[in-house]
Amino acid sequence: MGILGLAVGVVIGLKVPIILPQAYAQYLSVAALAALDSVLGGIRAAVEDHFDNTIFISGFFSNALLAAGLAFIGERLGMDLYLAAVVAFGVRIFQNLAILRRHLLKK
Amino acid sequence: MKKPIYFSIAAVSLVFGLLIAFQFRTTSSIAGGVPVDRFQELTIEKKQVELDNAHLEQEAADLAAKIEEAKKGRSQASEVLESELSKIRMYAGLTPLSGPGVEVIMENPPDKNGGASFYSIRDEDILKVINDLRGAGAEAMSINGQRILATSEIRLAGNHINVNLVRLSPPYHILAIGNPGTLKSSLEIKGGFVEYLSANGITVAVQQREKIEVPAYNGSLKFDYAKAAQRG
Image (cartoon, rainbow over all chains, first blue to last red; front, side, top):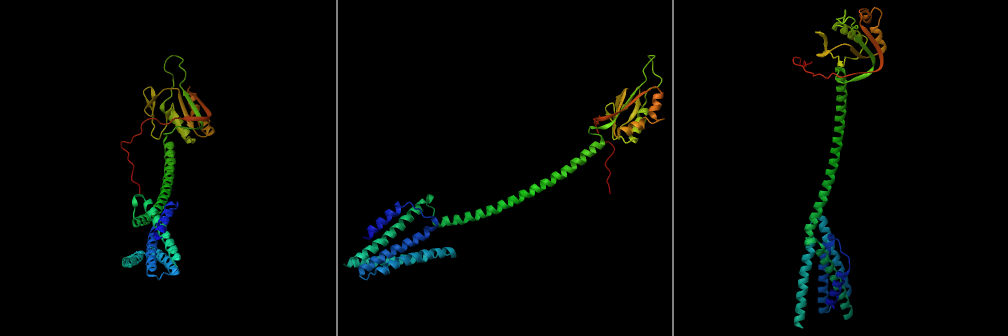
């Protein structure tokens, strides 16, 4: 189901004739990372059977917005703040993936 | 319970896919795949250069205005110099002049016997006429096309009269620019020089002219001995 959504998203994204300005590329990349983290987190929660829809959706949006906001503020301050988001999400993605892997293998 | 899970995950995955696709297209749309950092650096640099450019353009405009002003000043100065120069040339007799004046024609008495006449025009006669004309305010004079300068000589050399080292022969046409009435009356005054010459058989015709053209001095100007003295 997740892969299907991903495929549909990619197709739509490639077909929509909008090219975002390059200035937004950084925010978009961090937001994409947040989305990936949310997806993995959601799947992990689903596997662990404590999935909450509101938490999942709100988490997704707040993570994405916070990551983009960090990148924005970092740029204004002349600091690579988006690196914080990248590291945090990266660590969580690997953690989630590891837990997911264990759950799947134990089944 | 399972349905909303899948739905949410699918929705978030969709958003994720969208973001990735956008990102992919944005990155690949940059020619040569220039990294974002480099792009931002270059953008900042470009802004800086544009700012510098605006400054420089303003400076160039300022300088052009200054050049324009300087040119104007120079052209004014050269105009003043030019007018001064033309005045001095006029004064020195290097430019042809025209204006009202008189034409004096002096001729030796006709040769009746085929020999030398009793009285012929001498250099002193011409000098006196010139002197009279000067005294009456003549501003420019010429004899037979020879402009009278401050350095011009009028002297007898054999059978001829030399003016500006050029031999002249009668009849002598003397042109003088000035007040025609004053010039004429100064020559034809009762008991004056013209009367004296006429009594000696020389024909002297003084005619007032509305417009007389006095030619320029066309000889060479040189100062072998005189040098400008330091003033002050």
